[in-house]
Each structure stands twice: as C-alpha cells, then as structure tokens.
Image (cartoon, rainbow, N blue to C red):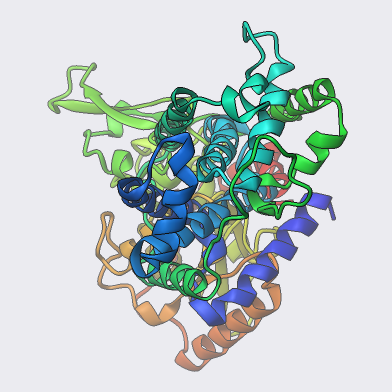
Length: 536
C-alpha cells in the first residue's frame, strides 16, 4: 500500500470519527473550504467593527485597543477576541485543507489550477495576520515589527532600511503607522480576490458551510472569546527591547526561527517552499483519461451535461452542423477530468438501444457507454445463487478495487439511471448496489448529489417509475469502510433473495449483447488500471 493510500485511509477514519458528532453533512473535515470562507467573513466583519473604535495614531493606538477591550468588553472586546481566534482557526483550516487535497490527490492533472492559485492564499493569510498584530502596538507588536522589518531589509528593494523606523521612539511617525493600517486593509482585499480566483474552475463552488456547522463554529468562537479574551502585552517602548513576549503560535510560530537563522536562508527557504508547492501537480504529473467527446448526431443541446459538470468543462455554444437545434455542447479538454458525470446526464445514454452502434451525445473515448454496457453484462455473468447483487462502484470508495460482479467507475454518477433499469429488466442481477465514495465528501464533488437526485426523480435523467426502489442500494463508504460496505451489501443480498427474482424482465437481446466480450476486454486495459492507480 502506498504512503498516499495509507494517509487517505487514516484521514478517512478521522473524518468517520467525527460523523457521529456532526453528521456526514456537517463534518468539519469535509467542509474545510466553506469553513475557510466563513471564517474570512467573520474576520472581515469584526475587523470593520473594531476599526470604528481604533485610533490609528502611534501614540493612541495601544490606548484605544485597551479602551475597547476593557471599557467596552461586552461588544468591542468580544469582537477583538473573535477577530483573533477566527484568524487563528482560519490558519488551521487552511493548512488542513491543503493537506487534505494533497492526500486525496485533488491537486494534479486538470485540477492544477485550484491548487496553484491556492498557494498565494497561504502567504496572504499570514501577511494579513502579521500586519494585524502590528496595529495593537504592544510589546508583541514591537517584536513582530522589528523582526519583520529586519527580514524585509535583507531584500534589495528599499532605498533605506525600514527597520530604522523602530530604532527609537522619535523615529516612528504616525504616517508610517497609517501605512500599516492601509496594508492591513489592502492585503485582505487581495486575499479575497485570490480566494475568488481559486474557485473559478469549480462549478457550484461551496463558499458557505452548512448552517448548523456555521452556527456551531461561531458559537464556539464566541464562547472562547468570552472565556479567554484576547489581551495586550504592555505598551510598546522602542527605547527598550522586550525580554519575553507571548507568541500566537498559529500566525507567528516561525518568528523564533527567523530570529536564529540568517535572513538569506529564510528567504531562500520561503522561495523554495513556494516553488515546491506550485510544482507539486507536476511532480509527477497525473495520467488522466482523454476528455469527454461530443457526438453531435446524438446531441440536441439540452445542456444537462453543462449543468451537471463539476468543473465547468462543458459550455453551450451555437450549433455548427446545421441540425434543427440552436445549440450544441463543447468540452474544454483543459478542464475535463474524465469523471463521466456528463455521460450519465445525457438523455441519449441508454443501454437499451439495439439498432446501430451504441453511441450517446457525450461520451468518454476510453470508457464509452457501449463499453460500459459490455462490462456490466460480463460482470453479471460472474454472479451466482439467490440474491445476486451487481455493484456499480466508485473508484475512490470502499469498493474501488475490481472484483467479481463489480464494475468500477471514475464516479457512480457516470452510470445513467437507465443502466440500473437495464440490469434489472434484462435479468442480469436481482438488485444493483450503487457504492459511491464517502457520504461526507464526493471525490468528484457532485457525483453523490446527482445520483441521489436522479434516483429520486428530482433531476434529469430520471429513474423510471417502473424500477422498484427496493432493488437499488445506495451505499456511501470511504476507503476505510470496507467492512461496513460488505455488511450492507450482504444484508441487501439477503433481502433480494427473500423477494425472489424481478418479475418484469425479459432475456437479453442478442443485439444488446453483441460484441460484449471484445468491448469489455478493451474497457479493462489502461483506463481501468488508471482508475485503480488514482485511488491508491
């Protein structure tokens, strides 16, 4: 087992441990991105409120912070503490989000854009927090300002050393302090822009956590703010050097290192760290299947695939072939991750077709609908006994390893609802288990939601009403939940055995089965290996 697979299972277990406390939908580890946005707005709102009471002058800055913290503790003081603790939590959430996306391999291939645009966010968050500590102008602020400016002076970009502003009380002017206020406002605005760019290649990006999780997070921050209010560490005095200061280890944890290591080494390390992060998506690059392909003879431009694509890789454009439809769809190969969700959303993706070649409006070159039908027929031939269960599995979940009676897909939403109808009505199995990845977090973001909505007849293409819901099992299990999935599938098989064979079925048509062996053999070559490798 690879290191990434081990880490993935460990993280999946940690997330599963939080499910009983929060539920799958409110699990904080599955909502790190939305939580980061929520914390940003808390920090922004409290920062604006604190600015009302804050005096930007050098002489009065410390006094104004003490006044709002003590005399008006019940609103401004709580806002100050909330501002500080939300900033700290934002750093934790950001770093966890970074690690989680790496472990789940969501940074390589066509997903490089979100990863690379996320790297500057790391630095902007830290710069925002550091400049915020300067404004308190206590002993900690003095230490941070002197250390930071000495580090900046090592760069050949300033005409005069800016650390000179902190040598004596007379050297620091209110004009310089006003500049610090400007930086503390400007940097978060740039951060907000970077966060917006970060999600531009994601359809229906979640920037809001579930309301319940947001309420819990805000309530916990307010409680901590009341029990452990933020406090200053004595007024700054440039005539002396602070002997001991208490650090905020979330934002200022590297400052002791900066004190001990030459500035050149610090800047070199920061540059290398940034370049390594930016280069990770290509070290090594991820081998992905070819992008989805549009077949205009079977596309009426209905735009269902446009609405369902999680990555904004499909757009609606003017018709180009003279067909009596105003639009057609176009695939951006630079964004398509070959998840197959578009194929599952196409109304022409029906395995029941018997005349002519089985082609759909949008298909995967290496995993076509015809090949998928062939794989299903071959997998069904491996089933024996009563209560036969054919599993349509996600390659990133507990059933992601190929096995008898199982068809592994990049995402279960790749399977159109008509495929489940086909399996039952042709007597290929007594029931279908749709085994997706973890309920708390879909590898392809929207696969679980679209699958459930299609089955519930809430989203096109609908599952036909003739298909008995009791013969479908939807199970969502992460890579560490193999035992639970096996238990659910065994229970489902027993229930199917008690029900008996599906009554409304007819034998598989020879035209439907024609060429299944050859197509299935093709489907289990490089593309199958690629899915399994991606799940490791």
